[in-house]
Image (cartoon, rainbow, N blue to C red; front, side, top):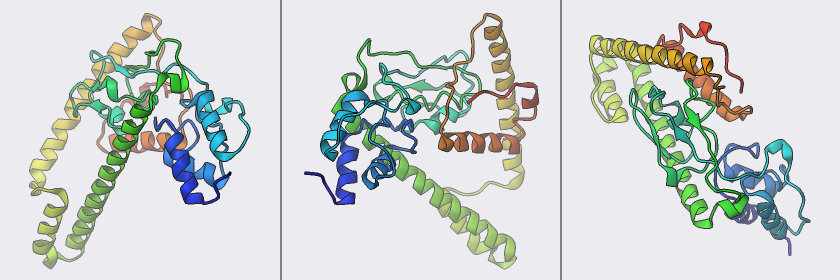
Length: 283
């Protein structure tokens, strides 16, 4: 019997998805796709990681026939694993920002590493990398779809994605609180004394003097710019050897927006002033 409760149906559809959070379905994560399928806004054959078995599972739930995977969303394939070339990585953190399940560890100006058992093979870390240092080799042999992914892996990925979304929401709230405190302080000089504790509470620490902050920012710009220059030289060496960029050909609108925002931050910091010399990457 077909389920008619849209909320319950969305929950049950989400339970059948592989939780790779790859956006290949055309939605920003598995949950929004589940809701779209439940409402009829999306078809149930748009999840390449789930493959043919995933479609069969959804068809059984929905009481509909099994249909082929929509090739515009991708193809069923062996599960890949993100691998970072640490000799080329510049520590820009863009891949960490893109990873939907926090499977990449590192810090600004430090080399990053993928935690293999946490990686869902979503490809989302590849396009933002400015130095093309991330490869996605297949690690499941000829096994594809649900044969290359287990329910326990899906459940764990779902939990990590939900924790990440909750953390990002907290960070946004803190940033908004800090911005509001700064606006209040700027508009009302007499409020400076009360605004400072509010800003401190929002950021979890005390603010630094402007001169010290500016000096730190200048040092950060110099260090990252030097790293980018070294990476460009390495990239030219790889190109001379005939090694093409590893970026994927298609990027969702949400991921592209994230990349654009990161690039805007780089421009504000003065880190993109030499980018005119670098041909734009294809997304």
